[in-house]
Length: 493
Image (cartoon, rainbow, N blue to C red; front, side):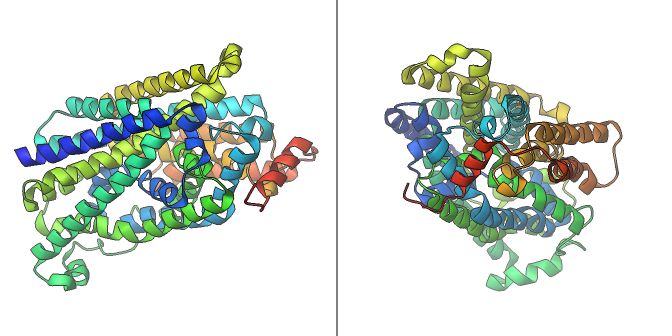
């Protein structure tokens, strides 16, 4: 990296801190800090939901998969996320917004107390918080790897730099700082992504025809929809996991819907996010797919994208791309910190310390900032030790994807009246069954990646649905009332 690149990156960091400072004066209480006061417009919510699904891991772990296995990455990742989010737009997203309107929630797990019971809510809140520490730590480690490739900065220094910047602006600015950073990073990502796309087309020397002719020059299998171990079964497993993740099982994505003004607005936001997932990743991933043409036999495929940026982009544009990658990661890690903080301060601490329930709005806002700070520090520590968990890919795919389902299934299906007979006891059995399956697969590994990633979610899903179907217990009136309010189509209330 040259001086101009560092200047571009520094300007980006200043923009982040400025957004955080602006948001600081807009945040008056915990509702503003966690849900933007329920005032997110559909376009900002949709863009924020979309970019919050990216991180630097896309340009590290996923870039490695694009290099070794090709187009299948788009099929099992971007396409399944787009389809999942589109389904969620009609069945799940509006219900999250109505939960805030009718039940006054500020965290995604807050409604579980009414839907199930205190024990189930606490199990999901605690387990989900611990899982997010691993997931967010993996994303911090990913961007540190890229910074190392670009500038030679050590992984440790990179993690600390990214973590501290995230720590400052999200702690002071809350969700408003987060979503406006998302919008800013979306613009930066568009500029950087289109620049890389055009540069690769120029290097291929086929002009616009290179979009199509490039695939014939790739290694065998890299242009296929499915390339072992990323089979059609793996894609179906990821579709299931991504549905529960992007409809709100990943808490920070639920917050994008919760913070809208109505179910109708939340639906429009989800449709926008879905549309972007179908289209934009094709442009974004194209340079990664083309990497084997320019660099054969790279020792570490996860470094392929960073190598291409350094090789093909002039000074200044390298800094722009790196700023884009920082933005991707900071967007996701900051929104994770904000939402997990909401779960801790709204659903965990008041149970441990009942006096929290009597705190004033000023004290609750202070608690919100302290918990956000502490969670971010824990993710930094996890990132510094990512090697113990299988590296970036291990943290994000083998750990987070496999563990997400058992936690998300009771949360997402609990919103739907079709599963109202699945009570707190069944939800806990479902969660424990899924987590037990995960542990058994770690003790007794299997050769199938699909089975390793999908089995915990499938076991949890089957337990939740089948046991609920067989249950003869009457549905509590408060659960019926909750589902009635969530299905209410009167959008102006």
